[in-house]
Image (cartoon, rainbow, N blue to C red):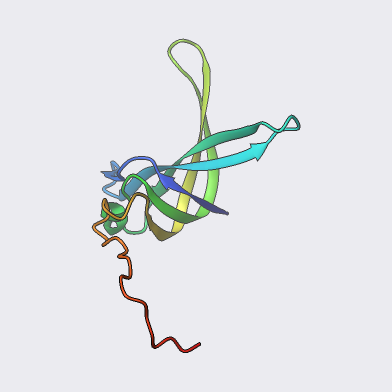
Length: 125
């Protein structure tokens, strides 16, 4: 299965009792649709992700980064202390593609585009 979304918080590397390391992070999948009445609705679906193959990816999985994930989806269900039924989507990631961070050019240290002050006379058309 393939999911594309934005990382909701910086990834954390944890270790199991057996000494195996895992990178845990969460993504938000945003969706927008129009109702029959013409009203635009926006919903976000949150998915908890686990990547077991290489913990070296963790520094790149920062809040706001757009990621494309491949793997298996699952569901966790439980009853909280108040007796309410709860559930969460989980995703066992087998492959990650990073598509960049959101934000303005200034936040990313990318120079802003500059205006051309002189007309270019050597255009090929």
